[in-house]
Image (cartoon, rainbow, N blue to C red; front, top):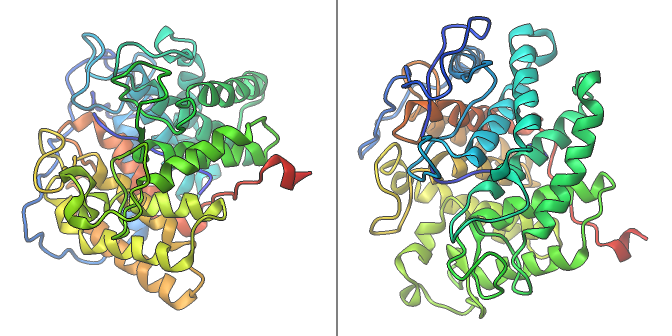
Length: 416
């Protein structure tokens, strides 16, 4: 899935009636409905009418585009950088993901409402990468700009591949694509490898633990960039892959953060709350897919990760749109919910058995139908503004079989 390499902890802003009308002030209160909090058991939902669900999802996404120019879909969570409820990195990342979802749904090129909205989003992302909070840096011990870097890069590579960049923006997009690759490479944790938005020991301290939740998507977009001719050092990728492998525990799950030592032989009883196998139901698939793309995984492990998502879907669902982040028993945060759907859908498309793949697609649509909001959107945060990001992920999930597959890692030596 060359479209994504995804997102994390946050809140949402004002809905506007039409993308052609004047947008509300950038940080006006959200007019979007409060998302549903699911309780167990989650009732079954009628099967999705794909065409009608897609039409409603697109309309809901367009209505949520906000900002002074009606040009963005901020993702919002509990983290703040200043008085704004949505940090700059989340504005960039949320907008990129909403655009990727609009691109994934059929009929994009013949839909002027979507093409205009994505053009405004592209312009916003391009301009906002010059913001001081999007530079190659890190403030304090927690900084989310890396999520914006990942998804902006995915968005730029995707629209360039599809030849959808407006002519006046082509040179700037190409330049910023190169800059994003360089910035993502430079922000990797030295020596121990990987990426993390939380670095309690300081920005480039090698003793920081890599976040599996962030490292796998970052690696996927770097694989994509390398395939498109960008310079990606083998060492940065190898260290990131090593970090993922250290995080894999014997039961088949992945720790929240990669430790300095291998967890491969750690039993379930030896894992902390956030590292237990069920806690990784939303991240095991993206880790296994990423490792497989680099020649370090196998079909059995990939299938096991897909099964893990469905086996613990209820544990993810009960945290949807709830306050707080990591709570007992598995430390699942609300922002894992739709993240898990999209990366499980990606993993399903890597399965060779056509019959099994078709069955799993239907199963994915069935669980996705259970969390659809009344207005046709999807949102796993308690903030209405985040519906643009959430619906973007849902559209990518629904149309994953038509989204270009993620590209394998090709080391420089092999390429030569």
